Image 1 (tube, rainbow, N blue to C red):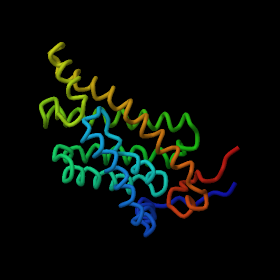
Image 2: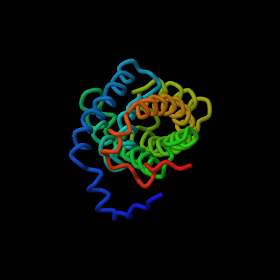
Image 3: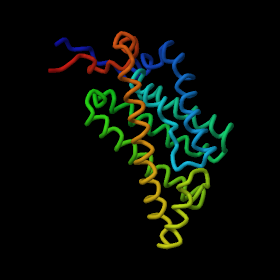
Image 4: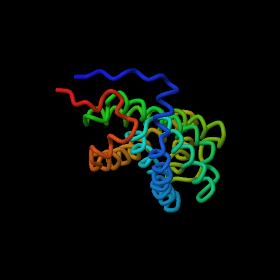
Amino acid sequence: MSKKKKMSFGESLKAQFSTKSLVLIPIAVGINLIGGTLCSTLKLPLFLDMIGTIVVACLSGPWVAALCGLLTNVFLALVANPVYLPYSIVSILCGLVTGYMVKAGMFRKVWGVILTCLACTLTNTISASLITIFVYGGATGVTGSSVLTATLIAATKDIVMSVLSSSMLENLIDKGITFVIAYILVKKIPKRFMSQYAVDSDDDEDED
């Protein structure tokens, strides 16, 4: 099995932001917006605004995925609810975590996808909870989970544990659905098309 020359961070970043990746970004953001806007409109206890980000992470890399996450939240803030804007940092972090785990080869096996999903869930739960607590006082009213959070706060009088608990539950369900959909989409992409993008990450070569 041949070894690939290790690229520097600058070279890797340049490779990720290829023309093909730049064309893919608005498509991925559009997919995110459809899911995010639908959940926001219906007040569902879900987000579904990361499907495109995960697909881009698998094709183009972590920093392109991070940009998709940022743009998604900016547009959601404009078209759905301004409350989404501070959560841009959450989407960026989730894009980076997912992208780097993909580069480590985690999306080649189902157990790796599950680990990536759990890592993304934990990242989202902690970062989003901090924003919810310190920026919005414990609830945003955007999704159905705000009702659960308010109920827990009333019952326990502990805002931190209430927000973390409701956020973890919501994210486990949301990210589970999101990763399943994204994984199916990625598996449907022809290998010849996948090979045109940056994330071959020393793991496009099949291992025994």
